[in-house]
Image 1 (cartoon, one colour):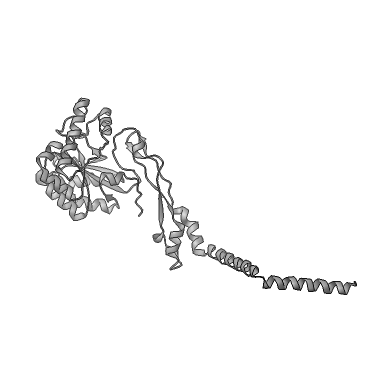
Image 2 (cartoon, rainbow, N blue to C red):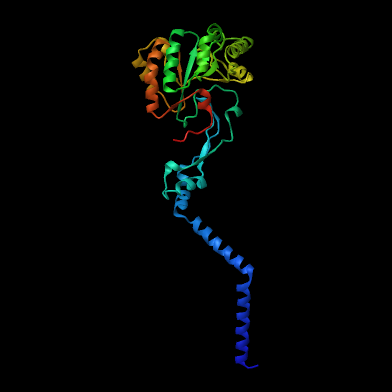
Amino acid sequence: MNNNWKKIVVICTISGISWILVQNPYTDKYLAGLRSEAVLTVKQKDPLLAEIEAKAGNYEYPPQDARIDSIWKAVPGYNGIKVDIKASYKIMKKSSKFDEKKLIFIQLPPSRHLEDLPSAPIYRAHPDKPVVSFIVNVAWGNEYLTKMLATLKEHGVKATFFLEGRWAKNNPELVKMIEEGGHEIGNHSYSHPDMKTLSSEASKNEIQKTNEVIHAVTNGVKSKWFAPPSGSYREETVNIAASLGMGTIMWSVDTIDWQKPSPDILINRVVSKVHPGAFVLMHPTDSTARSLDTLIKEIKKKNLHIMTVSDALSEKRIIR
């Protein structure tokens, strides 16, 4: 067979194979698959998606574990956040423009939580959380309490009221007003003793008896926080409260309202010292009742959210 015939055979063979491949249905599927992959590759290279992925790290924060601080004692953990790239892209692709206000986040919980720590008092929420809690200790001041409740309601603010058991027993109507206002109710002992010098048995009785009263005069509220009268306690006091499933709450900012300061002095005292995570101690007094409206407005101007102790201590991150 001469060379010309060999060339003709080769050409015919190649043509035949090509014809078979073109007519083969599996070839069509293969080519369709290639086209799908090409389309997918184009989508993955969408400039908007690439921009979201590139900028995501600027908005991400790692979670922070709960810890014991040498000064602030028990400090709660705080969730971290990362950008949900798929969800963010889905929202932004309608306009095809990057908009940080449309970023969707996923919260990342810490590994160590407040309940994992050894028993210790809590003076404030996490210092990175833009919150403030009003700690209202109630053992007297009925004549000012209703005005304070009205002001809190007007501003949509929830506080944590720590009730003396003896007071709660004698004023069930006011306790119900506090509960119906959506406020948190804590334990402030039964008879306002100095818990630091009280025996273990007496300390436990003070807390338990108050829990029973609060449960009886409300719709079954079970207090989870204990605020020792005058902030006086010893390590055993905290351990006893913990054995009853309760955390011990202190404060980081004091109104010193029992000294009957003028509203201007009280407001300046608090606003000049308030900070993210602050627990502000107050009582139902004339000074506080007259200052509360302005106090709330000034704290909110600092972009701080006023909420209950439980909400402030939660690990949930506030995303501005």
